[in-house]
Image (cartoon, helix red, strand yellow):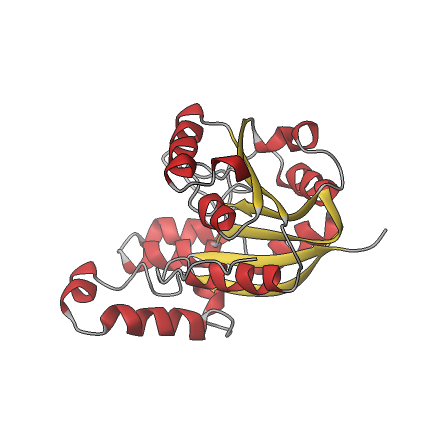
Length: 247
């Protein structure tokens, strides 16, 4: 099985690192479900590494782009595009059929995160893993406070679901304890927790474009800070790797 090609974008490097380590523990082609996988940012590289990936997404336009990308990359035979909502996962993916499920930036926008996670757990084989990426409430509070929107930041501190106002694009944000609790309730045991985009969203793009070595330094910092509290706790997103236990 080929290794996943190096992914050095600071915004996603830690997620790729966790996924590569997980897949390296397994032999042969793995069956992967990418819930809300869109245009294939994760699916195509995983297929290029030799795995079989089913992308479930509600957007026909995103899936069309995915299909083109897969063909251009020569992996169309290893990627299946299925139109559907995350809430319908249990009706789309057979129970106990997947080695790994990606559920990235999905729980923030579905009607019932608990039901989606139960479906994720159900479609995993025993000891299969779920890669879950969620928006972090703490980061949203700090971002608004540092931008001078102190009233909104204060409201976010107390808002039950970590969202305020009609203009908010998400239905909810999470803290680490809430996310872990949801995964545990679905029958998934959390093994790793990392912060994603600890400072990547704060570093000026002009600096990365003009300062020699800045990109490499940011990448190294993101990887180093991603699992260290309190830095991981204020990252824009939280990544959790959880495993379905034997039943």
